[in-house]
Length: 387
Ligand code: LLP
Image 1 (cartoon, helix red, strand yellow):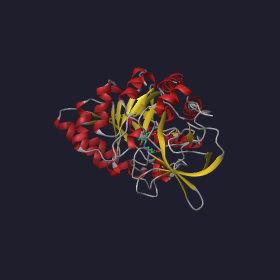
Image 2 (cartoon, protein in one colour; image 1 turned 45 degrees about the vertical axis):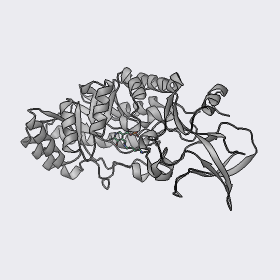
Image 3 (spheres, protein in one colour; image 1 turned 90 degrees about the vertical axis):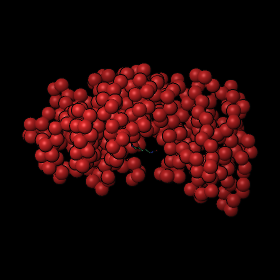
Image 4 (cartoon, rainbow, N blue to C red; image 1 turned 180 degrees about the vertical axis):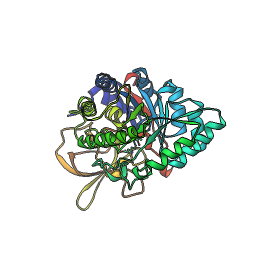
């Protein structure tokens, strides 16, 4: 069984592979659900461009009034070009270059999410040279475990991100002396692909403690940015094609202390775009190994690096032939690395050269992380509304 219609599979078969395919109807439905559930509490969502920065996708997200979360000067520029209003753009990142900071200042963004004392000084200096006051949200490291892969855990003291609790006293002193920055909020982000919602509850409790500390210092915090990280179901993309936004936002509503007039911001990436994307590939060869058969695809880690980098699972379907006798395959790409493997010992219908394979849930961190390794060309993206 596959959700792809016969007509669509026929069109796929006429299109040079590999390519990314985006189901914009599913994206629309996901965004509608997100809007409904976030509006319920007046929460503000900034889409994390790093997950997928394709203009066709950004336009849809912008059209519904969401903001943008950027981690490079080029992302800030892309968000502005796509029409995201300046006051809805936030800019995070542990290593912002002077040039990138200037891009943020020129675009009068909502806030710089600052990650170190030294960064505060540099933003202050650059803003002063432009006769501007830079709006700052301090990214604090809450030391909360996200129970996710270690490469995408960001909120532990051992991680490079954010300002640690023990630096707060000197930070507040520093803020008094910096005249070209204005503290407008606090920022947190504990990691990505978080499916155990209790991690977000721990985050809320930690944020409440931080807020009490700032309260005692008589420092107002008009904005709280709680980051992103909501995970998706890579195993059952059709059963759970839209994330349970209701439970996610309700948790923050239930556990976060919100002060009068305070605005609550989120930075979601994956949960908006992952399920609408698939990587479509063709089988080049079937090769018999010692304990397994190798299904060698024309897509590789150059088009989707997540399995090689994080041992991430993506559902893999033979969409040409769903009824063959089951066999065991290692599904691999053509790149000269043994890590170029999408899945090991997978039971799939007997597969032949030329069959079409869909690798699911690639809308987030798929195309954006693609590379030209082995001098491969970047591949096309197609959209359901014009395919
Ligand atoms: N905000 C900040 C500060 C972040 O660092 C991230 C993701 C997000 C928001 C959005 O997180 P999301 O809602 O998408 O989980 N390449 C990895 C994921 C890296 C995430 C980096 N930061 C992957 O393929 O799983």
